[in-house]
Image (spheres, rainbow, N blue to C red):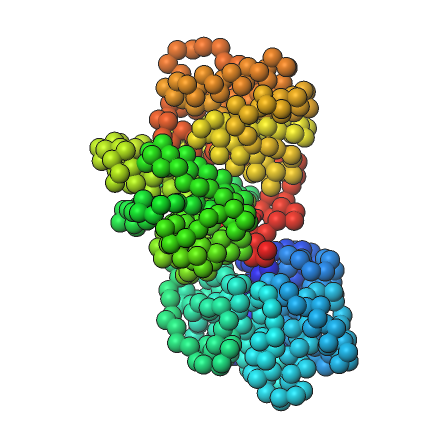
Length: 607
Ligand code: G6P
């Protein structure tokens, strides 16, 4: 949601601190700010509304020199997008400054108490209560550490909190509960970040904080303690696998396009994941009476495609519930396996589904992209998808990778329970190995045409994305892409569902995209085409995504994008790439903010 960064060094850190929140901007981008301790122990704050670039220019961040500082980029939850609500926040006497990610659920009660004790509030955020609370405790206990811990113990809700104080100007205090926070260890300089992008330019050595822990970080030390009883915790230093170059645009105009183009490599990486890990998931899925796959947003649709692959290739139909609804629908006990899918590994709803599962004794697994993320650390089994940093808020390459991994798990399960033979599985795997080249071909050969269609149809305000079978979740995911990046209304649904109501909407103001399978999926093919015919009969525009046919026949589409001959196993994945490009080019034509669409955040860490 929000991005948090902190640096403790011996020399000036101003440029590095601004860069940290620039790298974290995809977590939130409505306002940002910096609090810097200068040599005399005074805190200087600079903040405003707008992107890091805008605020940096408006406020001239560079003038804030210092060797200890914190910074924040915000995605508003409590309190509107205003300068005073931007973080960091200051205590009444300007002795403490805090930035926070999460939601303090008892903030109203605390605010009333603190106001009655004479504290003056300058914002309407839940965060500001934390800084006054620390100040309040400090007046009583006269120790920063004791005051910080006492304040943390009073907070209900979720938080990653970072604090600087003039009382101890050589250090940063930080704490976490259900919001990510990690510490990067450098040479006489230490970093704090809500994810590794905050400091990956400078160090690859990191310590991951656990829930209900706090840390005291100086330029050459980092002490981790438990909030409840102050017990010191030991933790291994981990080496991060990404590097800063991977998170650069590399000549592409947007991260979204760069990440779409990285998909051939990402598929390779997904196929190179250790078969033993994949089999571990398959075993877990088969051993338990009930299998759930869960995610939210894009990862919900990824889970749905997993469901279809499991059903077809393993003869098992898992329950797929959007993780925000999980607790209200899922029946979970010790005979349940849950596979969570998440790019960030931090999404609140999906974490919550896993927590719910664990509290009901389920066996858990997660497919995540971010190493050391909360989900990666809480599950019994984990697959790190290895897609590299996904910076655009809209998920593309991570989603495709997750689909491939779920298809692999389904295949492995199918071999284990005899639904398919090992030879067939090898055949499907070989088809998957051909997918990167097919994607490359589409990117090279079809981009121009897709761009033209997107430009010609950019006046359209409503889209329907239709598919059947394994093409249905891809249609839904493609509709989500269109909504997220171009702000154009789009709905994804099974094409068979169309005639049961939605067909009433067909007119010249609504376009449809039909995901037609390769012709050898005979029944699916025929049924999908009949939906396209229903739309054409009502003079609706239909864009068909098709594959090269053996014999030329007239298809019921207004326009079509013909893809090279592709085996059914991988066909939906290739069509998804086409739909990603359609959304991308629609959004660029409409001059949208591609990598940071309005109101979205890459990792939604609040309920
Ligand atoms: C947010 C994003 C979605 C994303 C979802 C799941 O809602 O806006 O685009 O699909 O989170 O994120 P995850 O990191 O768990 O995959």
